[in-house]
Every structure is written in structure tokens, then in C-alpha cells.
Image (cartoon, rainbow, N blue to C red; front, side, top):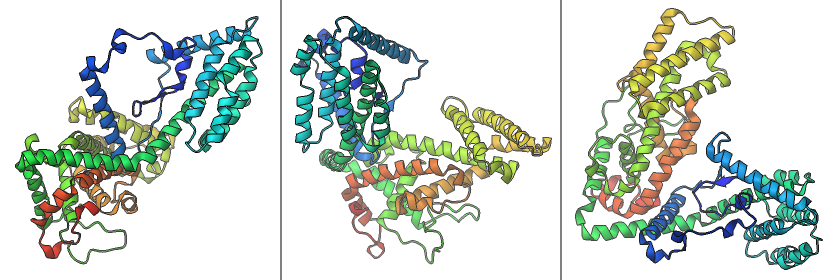
Length: 499
């Protein structure tokens, strides 16, 4: 039975597989029987968990629960599989006994009934009554006492009901169950598919409640911050300095580089449009530049904008992801210049090279970057040599091989020209994501980034979601600060809340 990630607390229907006939009536420890008043810290932890979950759902428009698959070779996976098999073997022995013992089967049917009822919408009253009647526990119990409980017949009704309730994506799984004649295998399969259907229902509910959760989180966060601001009027000082620096970056851009224009001085325009005049300062431009500056933050923690301190960990994760993508794109660009269009025209080769490099880049946090890049250069060079040979192409000369390894190793240096160009172009893409949106920005990717388009889309969406939520919470404060930074004649949008 698949488990569910702890993103949303769920009762796993597969619990019935892993224990006695009444899996939910297992003995409770003294701690479990204690009142929440005896453990206030435990209650606070639970409240905080719910609050964090609500915030996560509110910030992430694509939040969903997913199946947690345990590796078969893991200890947890082996124990789970052993327990499940033991239970279903026990059920099979009971049903084959003379006379049959239906005690465990009745408990399973009872739990299946509860799951089916939990999948109903409030308006499905007629179907609710049908399920209550067809799976009436008392009637099934009397039939079992008389040895007349027809498990295959009841299972057939359950399958028909699942067909009515399941999402289209589960139709095939339910149809496969209809071909199973063994009652034990069928019940096991029913529980597995019902577990997936419960996740579908949870995801549907999350999507339905997402707007309300988002608005609730916005109001709560703003109220908490306002309460702190009332007690400490200087609470926005660092935020003001942060936005002031962003406005200064836009008003006095550095001299543009002919190879890689600076992200703070380039107007994000769709393909085919040209910048006729410099972009005037606006709240959106200043905020976008400010958010980009946070991905390059090298100041003290105390100077971090007050309005973004709760997002600091998420921003650091995005910064690490950005760093890995910069190195990945740089590696692919250098490798392409040596291996030629034929090799990089093979999707299989590019995919394998990306997977190999990504795996090695995960070591950046645990070992020196120069040392990690040495391993990357060796693996990439070996892969290129192997692929050239397999495709019957001329191998790299010894000079080209040495040059390739040297250029790959130099990517570890922040001042490396290839890395600098890629870094600036990714920042330009992220800025366009904040101004134009992710999908529109993907239509005109800067050169050298097309091979990491999927990874950029993921990074851009995460960054856009975080900044959008932050603006919705702290928009009124940003508006007041920006009024002092932007001349009235240049203000194109007067309300940051509408971003």
C-alpha cells in the first residue's frame, strides 16, 4: 500500500494491511492517553505544524500530495512488505478454512465502506444511502455468522462504486482489478487503489481551499508584522535600505558588457521588441531588482530585510539551486564547444551528461568546489570520449582533451568568463519571470540556457511564487517606502498590491 508524504496528514487505507484485523484499535501508550494539557509543548508543536502546512499550501499554487515509495532494499521497505504479506496470507487462511472465518474480512469491508463514504461530495446523498445499505455492517455480520458472506459479490459492488467515484486517471487501475478472481488479491488491490483515490480527493480539496488559505495566510502574516511594527517603529529600516539600494542599481547601472548585459540595466522584452528608451523606475522594477539582489546577498544577517526574514531559508535554497544551474549550464556550454553539434544533437547524450553532472554538483556543499569540479571535468570528458567512439566519430586530440579539462575546471572560479556570462543571463531570465511571468520568459531564453530550460522553469516558478506571496503580504509597506524613492512622474503603478 503506498504511503503519503507528510505534506498533508492522512489516514492511510493500507493500515489495514499491516496488522491484525482491527488495525486502528491497537494499544495506546500512556503518553498517547494523556490529555493535551499534560503536554503543552506537544500541542504547540502540532499547532505550528498545521500553521506551517497552511502557509506552504497558500504559497504554492501547485501544492499536492504524492505517493511515497520506499526503496525495496531499504529496511523500512522490507519490514513493511513482510508485514503486509503476513496479513494477507492470514486473511487467505481464514477464508479457505472450513467453515470460513470472516472476522478479518468484515473489518476490511468496514474500513472500505468508511473510505468510500469519505470520498463522497456533500451533494451525493443518494449514493451515500446506497453504500450504507449495500455495505451495512450488521447485515454483513449476520451473513458471516451464517457462513453466507459472498466476498466476491461484495467486492464487485465496491469496484462498481469505485468506478463512479475515481478520477479519470484511475480508470485503468480499477479496470485491472476487475480481471482479478482471487478474493484476497482483489481486496489487496482495492485497498491500493483506494489509497490513490484518497490522495486524489485530498489534492482536489487542497486546490479548492487554496485561495482561502492563501488569503488567510496573507492577513495573518500582515497582522503579526503590524503588531511587531507597533512595538518597534524602526522595524522597516533594513527593508527601506534594501529597496533604496535596488532603486540606486536601476538608476545608475554599470557600463553594459557587450557579451553579457547586466540584468539590472536590461529591459525585459519579448522577442522582436526593442528598447526605444530606458525603462523608467516603477514599483515593479524596483521590487524585482530588490528580490534579485537577495539571491546575491553577502551582507550581515542582521541587515537582511525585515519583511523577508521568514523567507530567508527558502531564498538560500533558491540561491543554491541557482548556483548549481549556473555551473551546469557552463559545463554544457564548454562541452558543446568541444564535442560538436552531432554529439549534442543527440537527446540521449545530453540527458545522460546532464544527469551525470547534476549528481556530481550535489557534492558542492560537502567538498571544496575546485575539488568537485575536478571530478566533473574527468567524468564529462570520459562521457564525451565514450559517446564519440560509440557514434563512430573522430576522438578528441590530446591537446583538445587537455584544453577541455582545463576549461571545465576553471568554471569553479567565480570570475570565469563563461560562468559570469551564464550567471548574468540566468539573473536576466529570473528578472523577466518577475516582470513578464515564467511562461512568457521561456519563449525567449538567452543564449546558452536552452539545455536547462526545464530546470530554469522550475527555479523561475519557485522564485515567482515566493516573491508574489511576499508582495501580497507586505505590499502596503512597500508602497509607502517606494513613494519616497520614485519621483511621482515616473510612477507607472501606484499600488504594489496589484502586482
